[in-house]
Length: 285
Image (cartoon, rainbow, N blue to C red; front, top):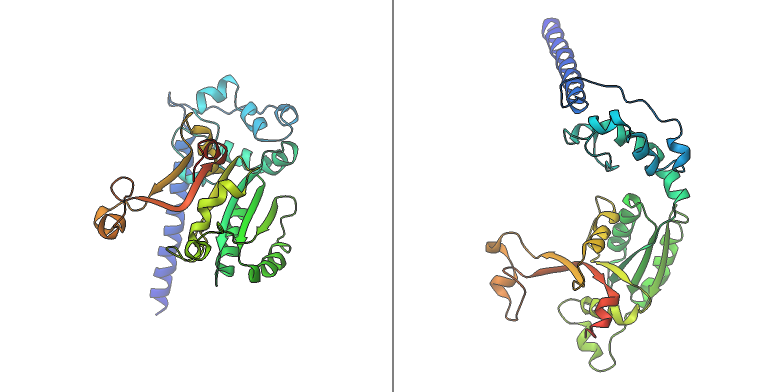
């Protein structure tokens, strides 16, 4: 029995050593020069002071001649693991940026990202989970626009006021409102309160751009990533959405819908990135 234990312990040790060796070789390949040699990048002592200790400082530190030959791309996401980086990206810059990103946010205040959600019925906990996931991963400050039934307002206030992210999150609660004519019909259309999203451009008149999400969405990366698509809109685009399905054989619209829909499988209105100013300018109703 002792022999088996010793053999198992030996195998475990060999496996651990092999794993460490593999990671070291991977790290070496990430830092390898295109010409086959390695160079040590001289740190720039004034980079952090020049950029206020932020991401710009990380870029400045790598803009030397040696850094330019060593890395093709210094703008590394905070969320990429070192061993998942592309072969032409320096892992060192990933650690450098992550170390100073909080200082950068303090010294470089940025615009707020506006996020809207509609909660009806028993969707309180589900909505709060979505909002927390957005706050945890996001970098820029967030402004929540929460449309909820009156009986949910106090619960939202109690929970959101206790969030430990002072200065990063603000929220506004709104009642569920529909046009006076056929209000009951609007509320029950498709799902409870689902049609409220259609009137967001008319209600939030002072909001230029908005990300609407359903209550069952869970963010696994910063809201900043999807918010950045606003900068890629051309002069005529007003909104961005994803297809409802990737596989037409299991799509809902192309199998069951009796009304017109976009494309092959329709679009998913559970996540909508909207330029509200352009929507209002087009008199969308």
